[in-house]
Length: 327
Image 1 (spheres, rainbow, N blue to C red):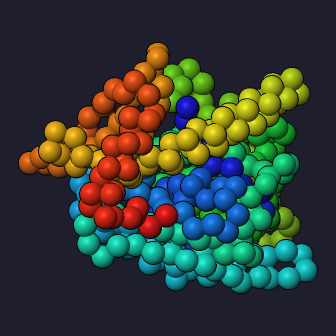
Image 2: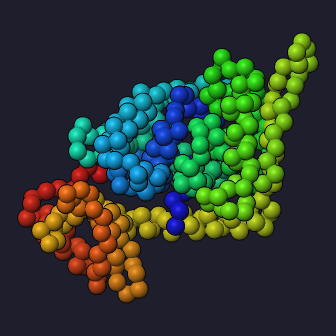
Image 3: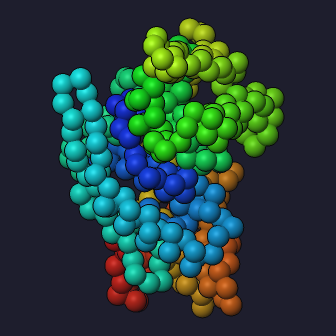
């Protein structure tokens, strides 16, 4: 099952300033981890981060440095959210912690002000696959992707030009030719043409087109921008929403099941294993682990039942008098 990000549509109206593509990936992976957890602290471990956003090819050292830099930037960011009546400023996280050495993880707790955007969502929400989002080539394409995903059922997005520039975080020094060449054309091509990574025949947004609306006066300045694409049909929308809700519920239950074992340690054949994932295979349970033996090695181990796994973990913790890592 492909992990999903789900959040209130209001999040799309928040401008995330100076976020790189990788920082976007980590941020939305955090939202996935925090979803429907209230304001509970959670831990996003580097092994899970690798799985979510495609960091598999990167070394642990690179991931640690990346996480430390990203966490610092996110923690220092003040979000600006504007409505017709007010402008709000707030931080996203009440707690944000990363290790100095060895392990790579982010420990996070969503701020109470921000929590409603990712908890108990029933309607007016945006949902997409983390893997598809993370595979996009630039932060600008990622932002446009999120905005369009909100309107997947209507196939129409219109924004004031100044608001679009703000949400996309396009430098004010960019002239129109720069915006067209460096941002809009590449984004439209990537989002509107056939994909090879996730779908070999269908683009993410079918028949995606853009139109700039110009005002009157000298030079006819651009006042608005609109995007059109093929929307989901009514039947398809209902089916998709039902499928999405079912998938989210199944994903929640699977995540709760996995968290019983995730990052727990046990000893086997004189090697200390760290649990990464567990799932049922026929009448057995397959446990994905990793351990160090002249390098990081991953291994799948079959067990007859869950009690065998729990006993190994319990024995290790008892013998080593250790507690679970934060989270």
